[in-house]
Amino acid sequence: MEWDAALYDRKHSFVSRLGNDLLDLLSPKKGEKILDLGCGTGDLTKKISEFGVDVMGN
Image (cartoon, rainbow, N blue to C red):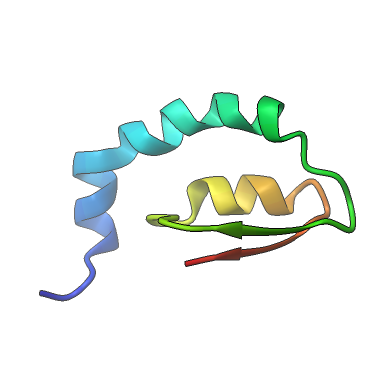
């Protein structure tokens, strides 16, 4: 089975919505390196990158 980002967003978008609260807990700081395991379509990875951190989604 191949990755289908549109299907993931349709069926599992709640994961990113629920993960938004984790950004406060994570409190990313510029210059940090963060690995986002299980990043799905990368919605939270993108938000983390906006803090100026070096983030990689996998």
